[in-house]
Length: 174
Image (cartoon, rainbow, N blue to C red; front, side):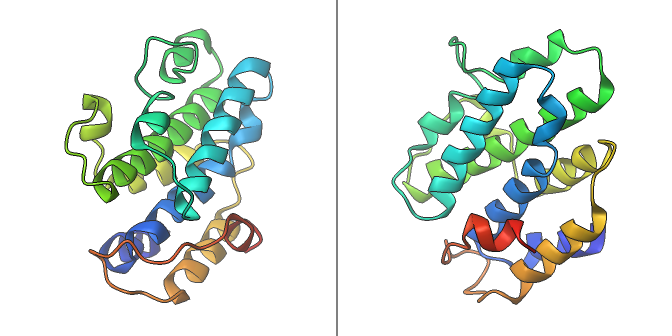
């Protein structure tokens, strides 16, 4: 899977890379169900990130609230509440995918000022999303591979381009 992930990072347009990261993270969302509030926050954050990926007007700052804020939306602080390693891995995969989407939303809007946890996220962070997600019991590696193939066969307009969105349904049904 690492090779397909690297291929996505190297060749896919921005929205396709975001879709892949969100798809991988979404696969482990259920690992957070023991934490009702954390699950709801992570679900809301993923929904918002998918809206940006699908071309809706979502500000990077709106996504960044789930990663670095003084509000109850900050998912990163929830990690301290978890003893279960699978929940920690799922939470990290999800927060990294949201941070990646936030970074790309800031960049697409031409905004260079962003919170430092968002600034620190780069394209190779997708590898960490996949690594953390795959550490969650029940993670479906074959499904992720199918998602990768869908993304790689979707029109590549070039790595530096925003690209067209790939619907959430298309990615998650792979």
